[in-house]
Image (cartoon, rainbow, N blue to C red; front, top):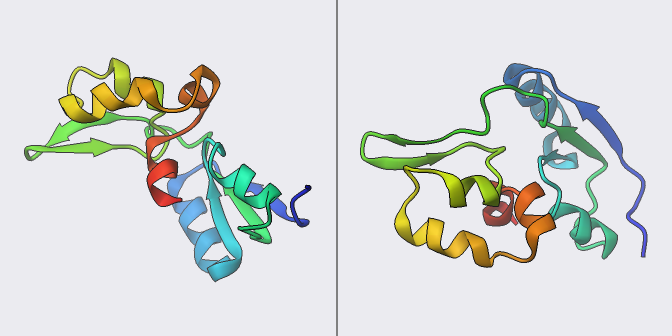
Length: 115
């Protein structure tokens, strides 16, 4: 099945992405890895009219400890979590079992949680 028609905006800054998403309201969705969203769109479980691609926004792929908590950026891929020195041991141990290598290298942890 093919997804319903949609438009894409490639955001270059976080501010640009947030402004576009605010303008779109419920019609907009964030596109990072797409490994959860695109299959949902193909099955028409999700049918956004507009995607905001955040892949070119710098500094959204970090994984770090902040005030004793794990901070995972919106563009951190499952494979990044596996390699991160600061990742929670449970999260890091589970990450290699997510789907297959293609999904782990492209799919984001945040996208999996969001969907």
